[in-house]
Image (cartoon, rainbow, N blue to C red):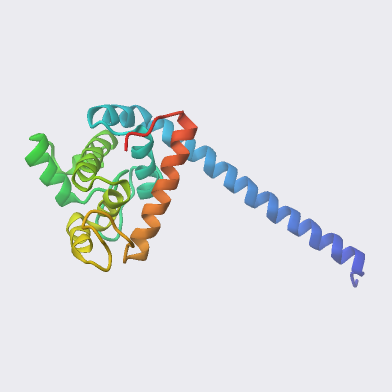
Length: 193
């Protein structure tokens, strides 16, 4: 049986409606699931924010940009956990600043990962003074950002970046700042930066 034009139109409309419904359902489910994960780690975020004089909104923004609140996240480069710490960075901070006898696999513990990642973020903010440069260093590495600041085509004053030469890092900085503003509004928080 051959479908007539009105039946084809009705079938096409029904299919489009079904696809739209499924997409909206997936988006809503994803937002609900992310909100659940945010709440799961919120107390650890507040404790780290208080300990290192950071805005909880900034820590939440970095976690969202780095792992989207998945504690088992790991990158191709080897960064792990909620705040995507490199194992070498974790070991260095543990042995040098925290002087704790935590095992190497403690990096996977959400509270530990948030505490160490927040400390490192506060260190970068103190060192680089501006949020965008500190976030660039968190993503691309401190040494790389120091090289960028020394490059007169990237920094006119050695302290701020005119542009970020890595598209991935530039996107990361912009996205994290967007998330930061989102969490300030969502949780009615104040900026600390």
